[in-house]
Length: 306
Image: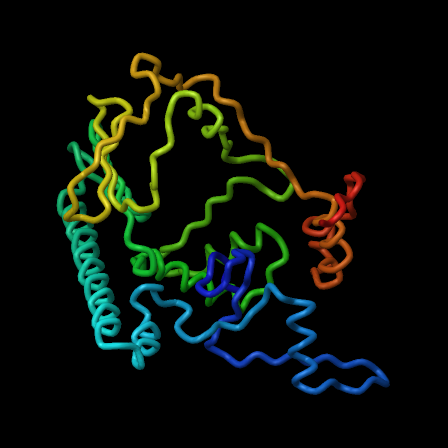
């Protein structure tokens, strides 16, 4: 299953079946006749609407998808020219952004040393110094970079491993790259409920001190300077002129770094507990049933569905 927001699907809960293989469903009921393919598809759409098969070109950028050009074939010449120019401009911008990313990572590799003041580039596109920091985002639809190799190895190992618990997931990640050790699992909690990495309520803590950045999704590059608290310089692309915003509501009132409230894991609601116990538990290994699919422990009233 491939989770996340998918082109052509408004609901982010949609799961897509990979297209690298053929998927068969074999359902046998004693004394019952098999349904035809049309009825099977209709039942699938009604009972499992959130599971779809990948459509052609679902992994491409929405703007640079050639289908837009194909659809413009019978339009007037000015409309066709507009579609071609729009795609050319977008691809040119993507190439510039990719070049900026490559230059940054190359520069960080050259100067990386533990004995001097350095600039470090993190895999989620974050470059940091002590007094000045920048955050850079690749354009949506063109975000393929080195960590994708690690995710590919995890997916290959996951497809060949039976997974019942969170510990099994960690083992899959660990065994996905036994030679290079590219993938190293880091759990933030364990199945018994112990929290290994605390989560703080930064949203609540900072809301009273900062304003929201207008149209934040339209910007790709952000820079901050410790000498100018609360000021962010934002650019829509690498060649654009930066736009300055003051996000602090009161420059004299800086938020404290102490006293943050810790967010406790909310746990599973009664509906999810019941679903795991009734539907998933029979498919779990015996030793994992009381870990992943325990009997429901919360007896709250279910909310009526609208």
